[in-house]
Image (cartoon, rainbow, N blue to C red):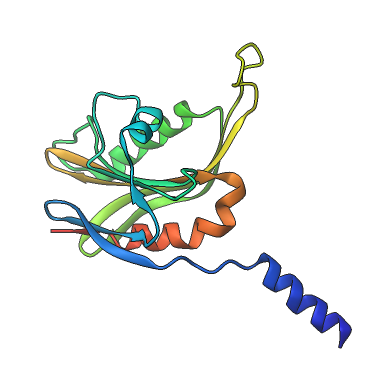
Length: 182
């Protein structure tokens, strides 16, 4: 009996309540699920996380600014919308972006009539011992999904620190499965 009580207590300590998700329209014809308590990113968030001239269509972050979701239009276009060829290109790009990748899941799947390319992985970017404030490695969990269409490629990204993976992995999958494109 005592072991059962200990097991129940331990399960309670290591379980997380999945956040409630709400549907929002992020752009014309594009909607997705976002955690209820997340907020749109502000200019500071954009400058830190997206140091690019191309701002995302939409981006949201949690209250601690540790986890985020974004929707972008990729600069890479595929005129024939071939997801098999595009998948290999995007996979190589991911492997070139990080120092280490541990791929959890990848593939092409159909969601509401659209073929999405997806990659779920843990990553490491090594720190630089010669740069003050950048000595430590950055370890993350990411779920990235691409929709290749003639003339545009949409990129849906979820990122959080690796230590928060258990808290967000299930929700990240629901968010990606809940994308609607008209």
